[in-house]
Length: 333
Ligand SMILES: NC(=O)c1ccc[n+]([C@@H]2O[C@H](COP(=O)([O-])OP(=O)(O)OC[C@H]3O[C@@H](n4cnc5c(N)ncnc54)[C@H](O)[C@@H]3O)[C@@H](O)[C@H]2O)c1
Image (tube, rainbow, N blue to C red; front, side, top):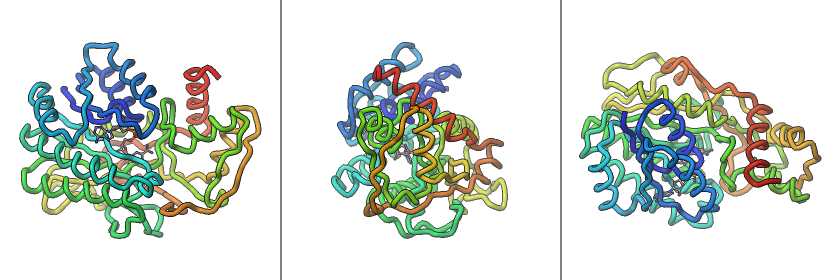
């Protein structure tokens, strides 16, 4: 199959593209190489992908609709997977406009292209952050998500709704994934694991928010990619729910799916795993929760399992070990 994936220089897009290429598919990767974090890491990811003719890179911002249209017409994808976004909960307090530009305008442009190309399946990344102030655990796709706590979450919720309207109007089979704290090799420098390992190797303390009492449903990146690859083949069909817990829209070939293992881990257990893998003590600076943070995330993975007979299971110690091994070899520390 031919794929357009947006965000291929990013953490998840890189892993997904690599896997699809290994499976024999062609991937056209679109990425604006934003300076949100170290661009050399993004370039290194693309350089690895570019070792084969089954990958072609296109560097531009999604807000540039003309370039997007041109690339879409050239590449003629069967499927579009839209991962590019301004990610990160905390940065949305510092630079909210980046979220409006990338997540709202950028996603709208990708949807327009999906409409004109009449792709067989449009898949886009949303986040567990849309569950916002919900306290009922585990988070289920059929629950209301009316109380986002950050602009990041609000823009992601908006993209889910925008995609629903296009699925209804133009009959585009659409899957919106809600990811839960993804981690692994080639991970993002703004995320906890990267920061913990970097600081500890430099002999510096790490910031532990929420006094260490927060919990996250961490998802190892290979498990996430396996879930996505399986979901690609599972395009929603209007009027054909797969089970009682289905989040299929009553008005469109559209569904939301959590991708998480449903096994939340305490932040301090995550830090312990880092300590064990590095073989050195982690110095901790305990701080209160940051504005917009939620105390816990916990995915209900029942729908994912029913759809694709799979759910993330990689234990934290294995995933953290793989990250640490990658980090030490990539940065030579
Ligand atoms: N990593 C996680 O834990 C997590 C959790 C929930 C949701 N998500 C979502 O998954 C997706 C991928 O996340 P990631 O962790 O790989 O992030 P990432 O920041 O590593 O990757 C995103 C990529 O998109 C590109 N990009 C950003 N804005 C762009 C724009 N306007 N035009 C073109 N390219 C642009 C960036 O250059 C980057 O390479 C995002 O939509 C994110 O919101 C991630």
